[in-house]
Length: 373
Ligand code: 9MR
Image (cartoon, rainbow, N blue to C red; front, top):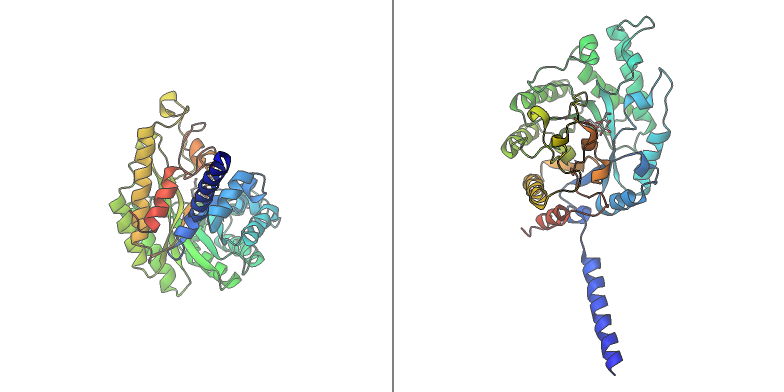
């Protein structure tokens, strides 16, 4: 008799647990109908080697972007020799798992192969040659994934923090026109694909204004542009959320969607208050700049959680203007923040920890999305 009572109690407890489990929400379920929730994926995830990472992607996210494998130095390391193995695998991963697939990025001053800008003598190519190389690269890549890649970061990071033009080879050789031309070529290759301009530190007013002008130029030429990607490489004190909000509204007022791309939040001290995401920045390693190598203190974890929550509250407030929010990596292990702008640090920038477990912020976002906070 006693045994059967114990068995009944166990059964009730078990069923209660199972019930809680099956009621457990995920990011993509909770945010369904508001905006897509995406993540960058790396090569081990693309190839299914990082099985825990892949599980998180499938369970929690409904959109992906390739962290590296579609940059031009990887796709076309030598003129005319395209290497698509990893990009093909990336697109197949997205299709198999029913994810919104973004391509990143067609035109970027960084991670472009050196040959792109020079002739056989090492001199800068002419404007005509560079336009032709840009057309060929964009056309080849976009046509290959026509109808499969749903949106492209066409131009990445062309404006400086002060609003001026970045003196990239694209700008120096072609002039301001390189942006509308890139959008034109991408649209010609896949008229149904969404096209985006993507940049970091967009909350800086001058930079925001520079980007607004870029978008207007594209629109004045009646070219397609669907969204501005506000890269969300946040620090604990940059940017002020009010500034982020102002920029979000300025972009939205142009009649395009806003996407929060590349979201992560470093908890590490910035050397010389450095912020942004300029990949060429590099500072020497110092022990005091790597304070959490043995674990993150609870108070810092909570501060980070609150700051993440504040940003998600903002995203939810403007869900009608935002089409996608994408994290720049799955777990803290994957994050580029561990190696930038100082190599070899231990950062905690993402939503899932080094053991592939969701941090408390994941549930908080879910509750916020359900309107429970
Ligand atoms: O996270 C990416 C890192 O692994 C690469 O080494 C780096 C250079 O290609 O690019 C990082 O991703 C960048 C993105 O493509 C564009 N915006 C800034 C991102 C962080 O640097």
